[in-house]
Image 1 (cartoon, rainbow, N blue to C red):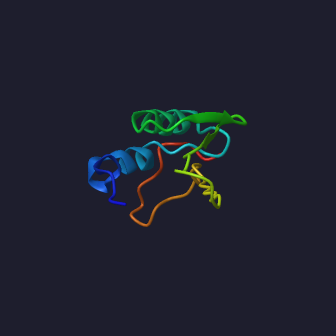
Image 2 (cartoon, rainbow, N blue to C red; image 1 turned 45 degrees about the vertical axis):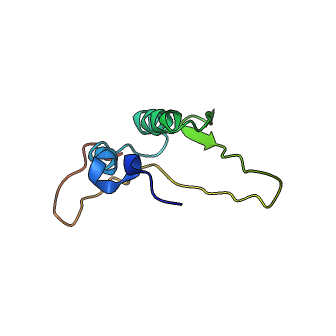
Image 3 (tube, rainbow, N blue to C red; image 1 turned 90 degrees about the vertical axis):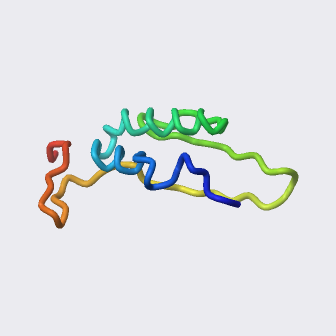
Length: 90
């Protein structure tokens, strides 16, 4: 399946997430950002826990189920370029 241009790295969305990091259990803006993008794509998502999301992509018929999991929290550390994250270390 071809990649959606809305998710292409040049569109700035990955850059947005990397520019606004949130540490574990504080990813409220990150979750809202992802939820808005899923809504744009017509993918239903529901909250899980305090900051998680569960999105379901229905298949065309019966068959195997595939689960994908991703972490969305940032780690409070410096990047190789010595750029400090926007989120203070906990």
